[in-house]
Structures are given as C-alpha cells and as structure tokens.
Length: 415
Image 1: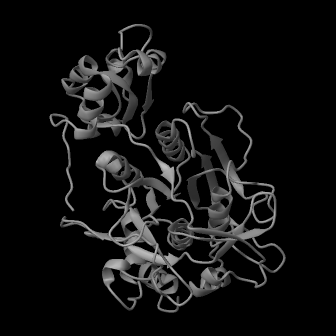
Image 2: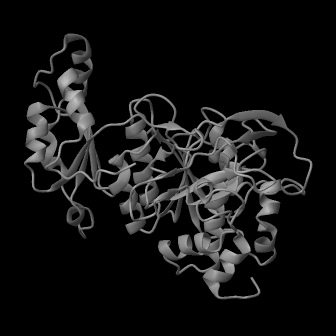
C-alpha cells in the first residue's frame, strides 16, 4: 500500500468525486503550520466567504444546485489549525488560491471500532487479567497511579454513576448531532462502548476489585460518536482536549483503510504535547483504520490471555519508510471486563479494549517522569515490547511490557 501526502496544489480524488457528483463537498481545510503555532491565535474567519451556508447545502441534496446565498457556515478549530465546512467549485478554487492554506481534503465518515463480542460478566478477581498480565499492580505499589496526568477519551461518553467511575471524571463535554458543543452537558454514555473503555483507563477500585490501569489520572471524556456530524464532533473533541492540556488521547474510532485526512492533525497533537493512542481496527489481517495507521500515532492491536494475536486484530504493511508495520504494539484485548452503563460489568473483545490499556500505561509513565516528551514516552513503550510467536506483521514491536518500559524511561533498574 502507498501513501499520498497531498499538498494544497493537489486535489484530493475523493473531493473531486464529491464535487463532480453533487456540485459541492464537505472539506477539511488545513491551515499552514506557522499560522497554527503563532503566539496570537490566527484569524481563520478571513476564508469564511468561500464556504456555503449549511442550510443551502442540505437543500441542494434534492435540488441538485448550490446557490450562493445566506451566511457561510464553517467551523474553525484554531488549536488544530483546521476549518470544516462545505464548498462548491468556486469556493474550492478560492481556498486553493489562499497562501495560508496547506491542504484540503474531502470530509470522511468516522465511527467507533465496534467490539467483535460483548457479553455479560462478573468481576470475580481483584484484578482483570489485562491488568494482571501487564503487572500494573507493581506501578501502584510504587505510588504510580496516573495522579496529576491528564488523559483524554473520545468515545460514546461515560457513565459517571458507575461505582468504578464515580468522581473520576475531571471534565466532560458533548457535541450534538450537528456538531455543536452542548452547553452544560451532563456526563452520560449514549452507548456502552465509552463506559467500558473509560473504565479500563481510569476506573477506581470498588472494594478489592480493580478494572482501571490509571485509577487516579485526571480523566477527560468527550462524547463524539455515533451518528450525525461525527467529523465535526471528533474535531471539536480534539480541540477541547488541547484546551484542557491532556497528555494522552485515547481513541477507539476511525475509518477503514488508509486516508491522510487526519495526518496533519495527529502531527499537531504531538507538537502540542499529546500522545495519540489509537485502535488499529477489528477487520483482521491485511486491514487497518485511519488515523490509527499513521506513523504519528501509537497504534494498538489485541492479544488474548495466551499472548496470541486475536484473529480480528487488524494489521498491515505500508509502502513507506517510517513505521511501515501496523499496529505498533499489542495489548490485552480479548475477554476484557470493564464497567457497564447502569452498573455492573461486561466483557468485550476488540482493539478498542486494548487501546485504553496502553493509554493508561502512558499516564503511569508520565507520572513517573513528568518532564518526559511524547517521543520519550512512546519510545519507552515500544522499545521494551516482548516479541511474540508468529509473523511480526501481526504485532508490530510486540506485547507491551510496562515494568520494562518504566525502567527504560526512568533508568531505574529496580523498576
């Protein structure tokens, strides 16, 4: 497989197809780096006149025409350096001629990486098998619980009334089906996926039983999927995470196959001190999901208790020099017990379940070395992985080895 790093002078084929078919397209506009990192926030509104008003766009789906009328409707995400809106041919031409714009992509449909299995479960042991296999209790015994480290979570929300998550959410935000931020949103889960992944990252002990890797991290959860204007919702969630200075962003969502639309976004997350930890997908060998398959993300596949890569866990080799094999690492992702909305627990299988294990680990490592850079945290995790049996294409660098990662990061041979 090969990649296409499009520039502003090159037209995204998907964008051209949308314009030819409908006369308009949703576009993701990437502003140049200097504007994004400027000390004073840039004025992205200078390009507003190139965009179509959303009501006119919606009407055009039946009429086939896109008249220039009304006030342009476009969303600007200044920390990401992204604008999102609808354009016709003339609007696109205007954007492409603007020297402050780096790249323009067609909008993409984003969804969660659905678990391949969900069943009722009872938490009978003091530790889930994933936490036990990763030897996370060794971190807790050293006082490393993620305390003081902000971890972001973009998913279907979170049930903060669950005993394992009560009092654990430092911040919550929701974006509605039109992509608008919901004022004074109350934490909740629109599905079951978000509470499960949240529990694995940040769940606190209930009695003598624990499900969360980093039970004292500062946890920020954004409800961004499923349905509606998911792209705008996800971008809004990422922007909000940057506003709240999170260090780790856990996302078990994306779209199938390789597409470079979020490539610059993930780079900018890293440049602003965020480690993107993303699920690689549940479609099996020879497949992957964007943006998890980008070199700039720490992509995660799934293993079972026997340290075998799950058949559903995606993996692929790209024709590129940097980070050609995806996923980067694998972690526990089969028969993972975590929180269930409304109380109790359930078991799920998926790379969505493996990803929060690694996000939680990153929080523990950052607590151990607060001055560490994104690259140092990722390198500590990746360079200490345990090689597994079988084709390395299926597991990348290998199974995460948290105690070894801690020793590599801190230089403490007793870790």
